[in-house]
Length: 101
Image 1 (cartoon, rainbow, N blue to C red):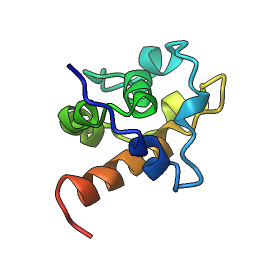
Image 2 (cartoon, rainbow, N blue to C red):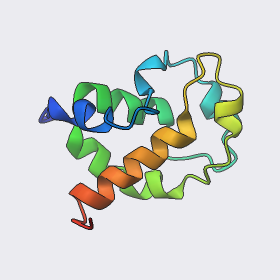
Image 3 (cartoon, rainbow, N blue to C red):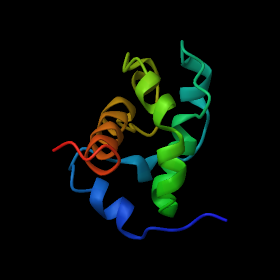
């Protein structure tokens, strides 16, 4: 069972560059990723929109494995700021999971 935190998206949305809601799950980011991440950006963004905070926490290794190369972002047909969104997720994890401020 997934617990839902309705404030997760609200909290991340404070970063004005966070635009995960623009993702329409086309898979372009997946096809271009040089790392071949275990959890895809579109899955992470869906977890955020659903408020599935525990799923974001489980994906910590993947979130910090992203190279932030921007290849996915450069080819995203919706203009999703994938690298910036990953940075925002990293900041969230550092603040909320590791309690580093």
